Image 1 (cartoon, rainbow, N blue to C red):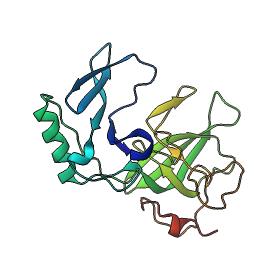
Image 2 (image 1 turned 90 degrees about the vertical axis):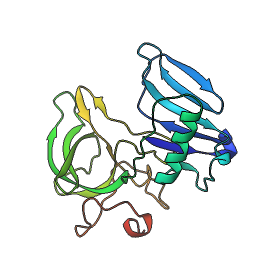
Image 3 (image 1 turned 180 degrees about the horizontal axis):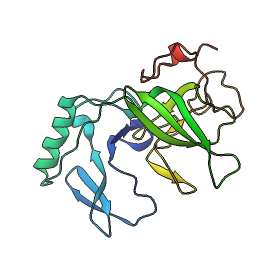
Image 4 (image 1 turned 45 degrees about the vertical axis):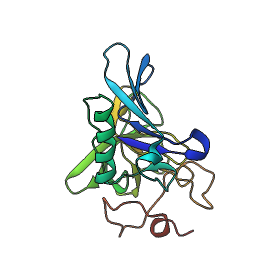
Length: 208
């Protein structure tokens, strides 16, 4: 679940992205200030557009935004008032966290990709396919988990790279739009004392 808002460039519209629609054909059903975007073939909801959202509550930030439970409850009230029966579920888990590569093998169908097992929290490890030249077992870096929105607007969803499943992305300083980021390939390298699962904090994790 990704909430995104950019009043200056898009208008007073909160976009709620439920799942990756890929290249599937989409259709839209609008009732009042609520539009449901769904897969044409299955009618499964993939996104909501809430128009004139400032009439419900104010959103100060831009890009990917995180809402309170009260704000999400207000959205669901609006959906219900317009005749929709589905509910929006609030996902408040951090999407950019410290991760550690705990295992890595070469991708069987690539000369530059690796299949990494990356610890991203207590008892939580995800598989990420990556091509970073500095990837190695023991490396701590910043991981964008499914549900993350990158600074340039890219959305992170579970996917596959050459037949291998991948559940996130290990990030370079440039991809995180960090100041003075080196213009070369390679994920950000953190000190060994960083704690796995800690939410990303540029002031703490980037001191160049």
